Image (cartoon, rainbow, N blue to C red; front, top):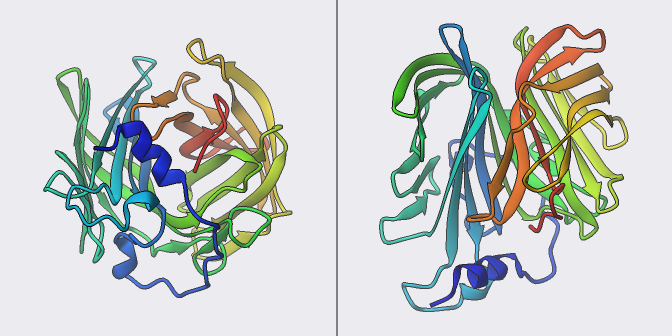
Amino acid sequence: MLSRRTVLLSALAAPAAWALPPRMLRFPRDFGSHSDLRTEWWYITGHAQAGARDFGFQLTFFRSRVVATQAMRSDFAARQLIFAHAALTDLEGRKLWHDERIARAGFGVASAAEEGTDVRLRNWTLKRDAEGYTAKLPAEGFGLDLRFSATQPVLLQGKDGLSRKGPDAEQASYYYSEPQLATQGRLTLQGRGFDVQGKAWLDHEWSEAYLHPNAAGWDWIGMNLDDGGALMAFRIRRRDGTALWFGGSLRSADGTLRVFGHDELRFDAESTWTSPRTRAAYPTRWRIQTPAGVFRVQALLDDQELDSRGSTGAVYWEGLSDLQDDGGRRVGRGYLEMTGYAQALRM
């Protein structure tokens, strides 16, 4: 039987990448899994309140196609791996809670359906129906039991859903978002339950080759604007810390969409926090220039570093943050994600 390390390395070992062709995304089919491509994730971040108490939450299901096992005939061959992360930021307690899972697809343990969003990893589930998404993730020390209802149409990122991630056409993903998801349900923290309401953001991406060989990771924001709009922006970084590629979009409250060109954005770090565990220095305050204006991103808790070396192998920072205009006035709230600071990301 393959070891976990061997399986993970095999999943990353692929033949020469090829450019994804432009295609029209079709729903509900594209809500589901795309097992012919190497990497895929369903990613929901958001904030919720229980009275005066504020929480941030994150849940991600990953699917990885293991190249080395595709020709094997055994039912036990790990052709697809399913990973999952869950996190809860307790602003009052000033603490991030995190848990993770990994399993091969099959045998009723883990699966990712193709006809629509239905991803399962033991007792962690994310499922979409006509009303929205339901997520149930009972985790170590905390739990998420949430319902997400769509309030806006699907937002296709990049050019009609094909999002470039680097200077070569091979670096791209099919990518859509569902911002402004109305959220309600129940969070548990150390056995105590909280009935919550809030807003969330969903990203679904699938790709054959995501990062350029010289890339170390990325900086990304997904922000639900207070006026009903949605802002997404990202920067792919080289190993020396310089920018390799940019992308993003702004959909205004009236539905007008502006997609940003790769040469139209700028990310400038204004302050950093250094992890006492990994010594990685993460910018927790950013100034981001876009064609739609200048924004600042401010983390609401510095220590939102996640150690997922037990599943995906990465250490990264991902946390609840406010979006401000250039004058410092809050205009939105969402998540900031930063990868490749503790070590270069492998995908």
